[in-house]
Structures are given as C-alpha cells and as structure tokens.
Length: 405
Image 1: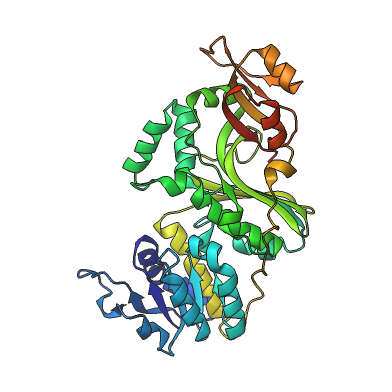
Image 2: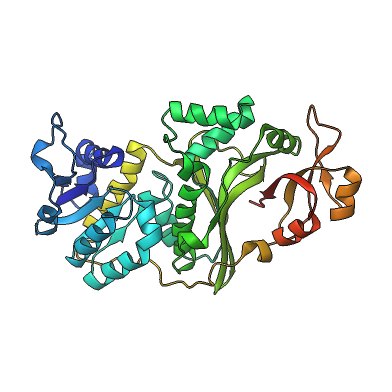
C-alpha cells in the first residue's frame, strides 16, 4: 500500500525509518500488504538522503495520486497542515498525525470532514509521543465513565523539575541543561509556560467526554515561579512538584480542565516519573486508576505511534472507524477557580498565628534555613477564589495546587 509523509523533520524521518526497518512485522499486521513510502513532501533539499526519488515539493502530487491511500502529516503547526489535511480527507484519503497543535485547534472540523468522506483521521502520536493513550481511552476504557485525567504531559518541564528535586539545581540552571541536552528549544516558552501540555489536555478532554475543548478554554500556568524553597518545603511533606494537566468531570455539560504545577504525594504513580518521561493517569468509575507511562517525545517513540495509526488505517481502508467527538460550547469548561475545591500549598511572609487566623487549620511545613518570618503550609479543601480572598493583602510568595491523584 502506497503512503506519503508530509514533513521530513525529526518525526517524519522517523516514520520513514520505522516503515522500512519494520516492514515484515507491519505487513503481518496489515493482512500481508506491505507499506511503501511513495512521496515525502518537504520544501527543503536533502541531497544525501537515500530516498531521493520520493521527495516532492508539490502537495498536489500527493493529493492527486489515486495510489496514495494514507498520508502521515508530521509538519507541525496549523498552517498549511490544516489546509492540506482537509483537502486530503475531502479526497477520501486517510490522514494520521503527530500534530497536537492542529488537533487541539481544528480537530472537530477535521473529524467532521473525515466522517463526510468515509476516511479516517487518527492522532495517537499527538498526546504522549510513543505512549499509547488515545486507543486505550476510546476502546479499552469504553465501558467506564471517565471521572478524571491527570498527566505529566511535557518531558522538558519534567526534566527541569527532576533536576530541581534531585540535584538541588535552580530553575535557570536546569533549563539551560535541558537546552544543552536538546530537550528544550532555544525559545522554551511553549514548554515552561504550559502551552504544550495545554494542547494535549484539550485532546484528552475532547476524547474523554465527547465535546471539543479549545486551547483558549484551558488555563495554563507554567513552572517559572517554582523555587528550590518550594521544592524543599514540599519534600518535607513527602511530596514532589510536577507540571500536571488535569481534567475533571462535573456533569454532562461541564468539565474542568487546566494545566499547572501541582503537589503530588510520594504514594502516587505520578510522583516517581522522572526526567523526560511522561505519564497519564486515567480514573474510571469501574476500573479505578490506570497509568500509561513512557517516552512522551523523541524521533522513534513518536514515529512508532504514527506508524501504528498508518497500520490501523490500512486495516480499515474501506471502513470508517467510530472515533472522535462533537462540538463543545463556550460554557463547557468551567471556571475551576470558582468550582473546584482542593488543598493548596502556600508559602508566605507571615507568622503561623496569622496563617491560622486567615485559614484556620493548616499543616505547617519546614525546611533547612527557613527564615523566621516565612511560613509554608498545606490548607484544607477550598476553592482557589476562596483562598485568594482569605489571603488578600498578605505577602504571598507562592501558591501551588495539591492534587488527589
């Protein structure tokens, strides 16, 4: 079966490599028909690449070739990936992608076009890289009502926090190390401010509850305000700090979804996830908590998920998979700061007496070198708006949510 790859960067080149290096096992899983990469679309030149005969700079070569039934979109970004994908689906070709930004922004429109054309639009690689999560949520957990999802969805931030926790490294030094090791871009904003995790939360929320969630509906808070003082206080409470994407079911018409640093206690499966690894914990009403763990990015792990989708499309080449979600609305994602109660970690310049007067019963924390005028504590359950009201006028240094996953 002829396939095409659009975008020959890290992931796209990995897709070609996996198709070629695993040709025999792929053929067994497609019913005996091998995959052949007929086109590779990229505007750049690759003069020393062994696939010279497959390169094209003209998208129409792929669109107008009836032999090409499946296309892997690994270009990234919304444009021109959205336009290309819509045209391919409109022509009845199935498309698979690793492009989380595109799926988060335009997934509903693309799924609707796939439905009209009896084609498939699959995106296992868009969340968690090589970690299987899309199929397990839609198939293996189909008998469950999903109550919530919590995920370490960005390897860069997890690497930085791991260095802060385990090696007492400052945020700035850990970020530089991540950049030196190729884990963080020169401009790391999308990672450290939570935008990358936000897109993945949108996809997971849309899948889990059946209505499209857009990035502008999901508040994202990054890790730039996390300090070694916070790490030390939370260590004394037998916890660690992770950047989590969290989704909570409220009712059929309402969910909460957000990205933020969170205190995770050491008994949680998420607490032990180190370095660039990702983990996604799904809570179902029948199955309880299940956790999916692995490399959330990288050439071959992500390519593995893309090729798995290609294989799935090859097996369903004349069938439309029942897959996707419907339209959402502006009020679907609630203001979690007003709706959700949870404990909070607070670090502030005040006395213990003032903390008790403002918040009642709290659990005080300690660290080596703690200044006499600084307190840190864990509150009881309350909403973030209530917390902010009780702390109004106080010299608050940091506030971090405490998760129950």
